[in-house]
Image (cartoon, rainbow, N blue to C red; front, side):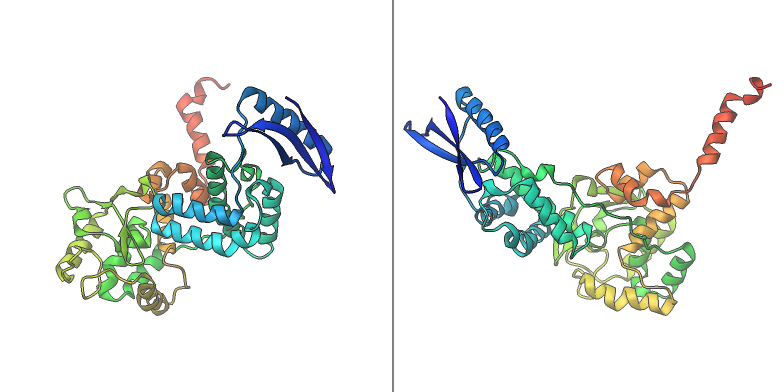
Length: 361
């Protein structure tokens, strides 16, 4: 069986005959781009697939049509509600306007790279990287489900992210901040600083998660839009060590707290979860202003926890597990620059362990 190359306008097409799923011989035209050399290469590959019996006819769909299929068939059942909401927003607001009317087979690495370049003119690199996540996942499934032969997003270069200055409080600022916190919220903000829990994890804690005997707490869920959900990853579910002073503070807080139907450690007067944004606006930011401290984000209390741990010389692997990072590389990438410069000290130890006086003249 042979095929041929035909040119229509500025584009080249492969023309060949094959046996379809019903056993009928059909003539097939396949777009092969604007380069004759690329068309010849593709024809050789195609003929090899046909003779080897591995050729399959791809399903047809626009990007917008496939996006709807992917969201319903995969994302809606396989991702967390917060992740699904993020994917839906990115797909509807950005990806469909860019690729929606295109056939899936017309989307190339070059086209995606141009999308990245255009978006970088308007938004930060981190935003573009977030948009590439569902796009790459969609195209990966398009290959598995027979819409594409190869995933064009695999060859797309991610934007480089320049490390932004990380905000965190100094020990002096932490003490000043805690002195200006409304007493009812003291245990909450102290726990945030001393454990490094994410805001959603903190507000989803239950008293049953606190191991009083071993001075630990278990992170088992996170609060998202009023719902208590499982953590964002397997390593996010973890044990976090508590300091003796924090244990004392939590015991006092338990005695003074309202009864919560959900057994929440930190709850409103009705025993229900705090509304996270309201907590920040009404308690966190006012306490910073009363203390005369520059405005930082609630999440910067997590950065503060890491800075305090590193200042005390805690091993980076231990810090990774306390934070619930999926890999130690994540911890190093985010916080490596906060680690103290101990190069000279460590080099000196090499001399000491080998007793350099015994082999120097």
